[in-house]
Length: 309
Ligand SMILES: [Fe+2]
Image 1 (cartoon, protein in one colour):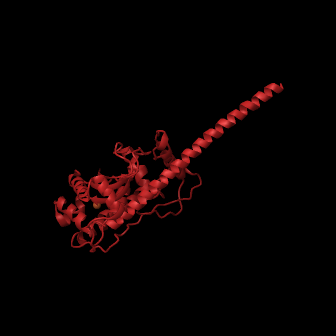
Image 2 (cartoon, rainbow, N blue to C red):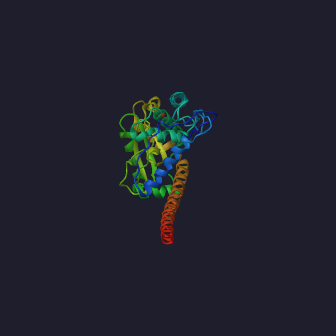
Image 3 (cartoon, rainbow, N blue to C red):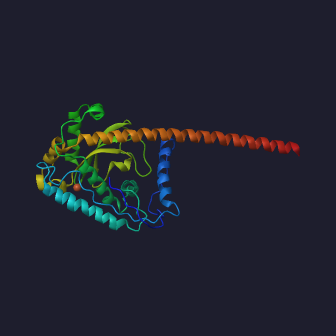
């Protein structure tokens, strides 16, 4: 996704960033990550930073998806709508505490438990569109293989079952929004949002419908595939026939290789997080043990002094 170009900058106060309460156990461990993020942007003496996000081009020519998605659609959708989000965000965050953060951090932090901060929509729309363009390729479609196919079959019953659920979600998302296939590594709330599927099993694939600009990153899910169901995504090629657009996207455009590689990354990140949580738990236990010994030593020393008197 898009990265920030850091140059010199500002004193960062993070006054807009939420500071939430957390539960114990793994949730408490996860909350450490949020506190780290906050500390990082509150660090005194941080270099002066001005964010400048770029309009990232699709990984193919603007006519590369024809005849399924026209050059004209790409010219408007990428060249005008996507560009507008980038230009708006750059104007919006310059000189604020969000200036210099990564795009993903701006999305997560400005989600603010659904009470969106002003930068959220533009930042998320940049994220979503970058991800959308990269989800497609000329000559796409077909069927995934390997681990991705196995997980799809496990979690949706069959590949056909997944296609049916994804298409249904995309066709029934009311108004503008996005539909995602995501890897849900856990069922815990995160520092800035409540998990929408807390009762589902961990480490599974889910299809989620998101209104407007919402990205499953805000729930700590790992996005694998998305379809843009804003009307601007399909009106030039399909007019109001969203169902036809969804079918063409799934059958002719999806890059399953990209989706598979995202799954590999998502699982690796989840595994690394589990190891980190174990390390944090061990460190905490060792700290508690060390604290207990310190108290004992203090009491023993105190007793000795008393006897000496
Ligand atoms: Fe769009």
